[in-house]
Length: 108
Image (cartoon, rainbow, N blue to C red; front, side, top):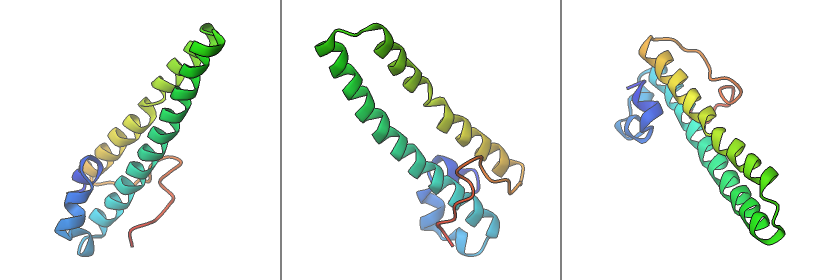
């Protein structure tokens, strides 16, 4: 169930295993925080990509804006790496917090 918290966090939440297992509760919280981070990043990414694309077409500034858009696209690797790290921690039975976003606690 700990690994599922990072893939589909809603399954352990509906199953209620977080109420009886502190291990699942910890990883469910980490997975939910990661989900929220991913949603926020997706919103920011969508807005910035739209703005940069509009600038590229209207201002004709292709070079630097294309590079910035590419860098933002590569930043999708951050949530992916955090997800993999969380899955590895859950699979090995560790309670290590995710870097930067792991210190927040939503599910009690």
